[in-house]
Amino acid sequence: MKNTRFICGPGWQYIYQQSYTRHGADQWPGYENECGRCGHHAQNLPPNAIAKIEIIKTPSAKYDASSSGGIVNVILKKGVKIGITGSINTGLQQGTYGNQFIGFNLNNNNGKKTSYINLNYNKRNNYEKIVTDRIFAPDSMLSQHAYTTYPASTYFAGYGINFSKREKWNVDFSGHLNLNKSDNNTDNQSVIRKISTSQTLSNNLNHVNNKGSSFLIGNGIETKLKIDSLGSEWSTNVFYFYAHNTSDQSFVTTFLSPSQPVTGGDGNADNKRNYFSAKTDLKLKLKNKFTFETGGRTTLHTYKNVANYFRESDGVRAKDPSRTNSFNYTENINALYLQGSQTLGKDFVIKTGVRLENTNMKGRQIIPDDTTF
Image 1 (cartoon, rainbow, N blue to C red):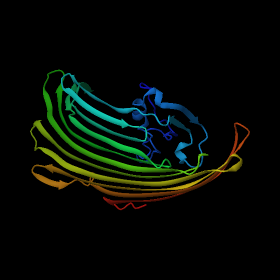
Image 2: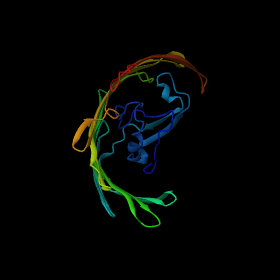
Image 3: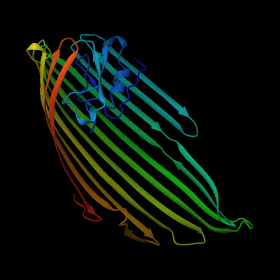
């Protein structure tokens, strides 16, 4: 299991059932439960902690429409006491520029309570060099030499705790923090020469700097109540995600030949994203092998983007209307479902259900023109 990778394909979801560790609240907007993060947890599971893996080709109405392809259900053994485990990894790669990384993770499992913390830092730098010569006229050649560096740093922290209370209640809290910083620089020199005489017709140098920063935080809590020994249960999940991205750009063009005034510009972009999700599910195992399921979910997603750019020529600075914009977006999705299933014999199941979803969207571009929808 250590080398197994779980990949979220189109229309598929990955779920962990009750086990020594649950991270059902650790999710990203647009994905159910652990889509996109289950691979990380699976690769850190001891092989003897997994009871079985189920492929559910016809998911119930409990799950979102995005799960139409199917569900992979990883069921872990109960009561496994793994104890305290942890690891530290570090390394570096050296070329023209170097990459360095260090990571630490600590897990504690005493059977009834589990907790974990993951810390990672990565510093990297690489470059791209492009040299081209193009003949675009019978006696003219365009030579371009571009060199770009991509230094960046990434900080990550993940944490969580899971515990049971009075045998019937299970509580899981988990979250993550992520900070990325980058500072890219590009120099691009373009020269046009006559092939026959090597005379320089044009020579200019472009410099572009892009600085970026992104901060993400996500926290969630999930509770589960075991109603009876038949498998009836009530679960609730609340999750919040926030992301803030900023970027600053400056660019300048210097005309070396023929001599012309220097042109350039600068700008910045700022966007913020908030995502809130809450859901509750009730499953009742009734007499005669009949199962009743019901629940609901609500999500609220807000997004705001503001970009301001300016152009400068011969010392005169003015706003660039082609790149300046402001946009706001709000989305709210509400869903309710009911489902009943009857088991006949050993393996034959009759299932019927209904799911209602309501989606409300509002988008408004304020600058350059109002395009509210």
